[in-house]
Length: 120
Ligand code: SF4
Ligand code: SF4
Image 1 (cartoon, rainbow, N blue to C red):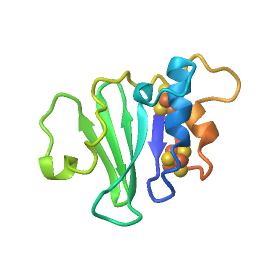
Image 2 (image 1 turned 90 degrees about the vertical axis):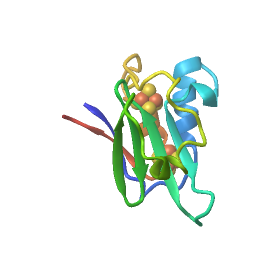
Image 3 (image 1 turned 45 degrees about the vertical axis):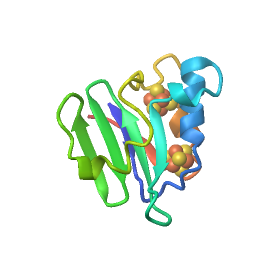
Image 4 (image 1 turned 30 degrees about the vertical axis):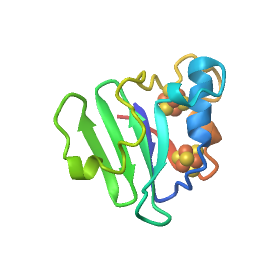
């Protein structure tokens, strides 16, 4: 089971980042969040979402999903726009395991249903 992100639906509203920070710290602590939307500096209306998992860093881009094994060397070209916010030191997504009833907070608060829970 894991979080899946459709970057084509994302509007970079940052609700998921706030919700995840709240889950981590009981406050709106952006640096605690393991899901982070980003905007590409050189492109207009180009949004992506980064997700830190236990063993992978997922980069959901409009053109597709990129799954990077943590610890392996990354292509610097690809990393350029997604590396603005440091992710690797953050805690990994725990699927909001302690949240009862309504499931992962990032899914609850995404207004455009860009995040879903995928059974594996
Ligand atoms: S499922 Fe929970 S821990 Fe994982 S990214 Fe969403 S809010 Fe954060
Ligand atoms: S809450 Fe949804 S629309 Fe907003 S930044 Fe996160 S994935 Fe994108």
